[in-house]
Image (cartoon, rainbow, N blue to C red):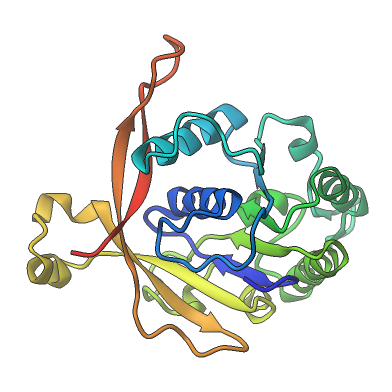
Length: 262
């Protein structure tokens, strides 16, 4: 991903597992999911406003164990979870009693402070809707302001931005127009990637058991600026990985993904 990019990843099977895997790849400089990593000693800041830091770290551990990377979190991967006060204050929109939401400069200032503290090469925001609680993600003018501010920060801090977002119900798999909310979300992103579940026909062609179809998905290049769309859609499989039982209160397994070649 080029510096200053806005890249959207729409909702689908395995979106968070794949995002975490990509973050680990970049932070460790290890190509495990088939993506080319440009550069070395890269830093990643992952901000998740849906899951706690403990939950994200469990998924980081699951991916690391599944790919024989050890049980230590990568040094250059920084995680801010939903339970972090900074994440709670990182709201991009506000209403202030007005009918039309406006940018929440205080929320973006918290994000800028986090960027100042980590100097990442890649920033991950997961998922977009949780950062926009003060307004509607369906309003084009409002979301254009949010995306433009993220682009401004990306340029200022010389980092790529990966935004995880949802698809609308009933949308066509792999179609950029199926991305939920305002068209500005896709229009202002340089690239849109969509995880798409394996179909019944693909299950029969690949020899996968119908009962296991939900464990497989491919990544479709729905939009790509400055470069041709990828002709091939790489396949991935979800797997539950048993974790060291460090706490009786935590679930001893976590879901992660691996590249799948059939």
